[in-house]
Image (cartoon, rainbow, N blue to C red; front, side, top):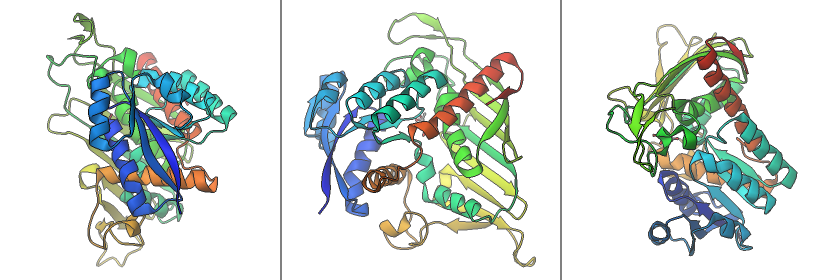
Length: 377
Ligand code: SOE
């Protein structure tokens, strides 16, 4: 018999939806020992919160996150609010003894992130940052292949995350849905929003990054602000490219932009080792490209592994071999792993401490873009 665990989720945006969907599905497929119950949804707009509660099946509604945190019947606080609120909510949730799941990036910067790590560790509460792409089965399979040593020594890591949704100069900054363009709310542009995903995956697959050199650009210098109504300077990075040296000696290139016309969410990475290479593409997320030099030369070549078999990561919990899953499932896996971590006492990764490493790389990238020199992480 599963034990219930009550969820209080803050924020009714896109991420609030992905997390809510995950809580609803996880029990049916993963049968965790702890069963999440959608207890309360919180948003500053009562209308939005009520509509969200109706859509996703939350039992109750709050409009003040402090009230949500004060409730005795809430076990997990799930933070799906803009980046500039993560620190304050997470610190208060830790002090209230709640388990915490926080959307990425962990914080606005490393100093804030460090405070959050200290707070959750002092309180001893389970904590996780939502870097969902780790839990796409093909990406998890990549981790397994690397850990088994199939690639041998790794020479290169190459990652890109391309979008095109901010090209129009008419697009305002700030407010609902567009806070990602407002540096005061988002902290940074593509570095914290998109490259943070690439960095999290890279640190997980290939170990720590030693140093970086970066360039950023803000193509549209001024935009109307949705809240103030004034035309204001744009302070986010619209595009960022950086080189990195990993501690294992491998070299890396990372690139991200919201100005790559034709690309909506093209996240790809390729890793080249002495014995084998792997490649992954979010647009074809259930496949993993794999090239093994040890294959017989007459049949050697890139193979496209259709990651749908029961013995491949997470897939035994879904349908039958050959039938693929998609983006939303990475969040279901995240909740399943978090709940298992709570039940077993072996925390799922990335914890706040793990995510702080990504934050440090993001900060080093932005510092290097400002200074024009290599920066040690
Ligand atoms: C930005 O458009 C965004 O929604 C990110 O914030 C998400 O983290 C990414 O997964 C998809 O793109």
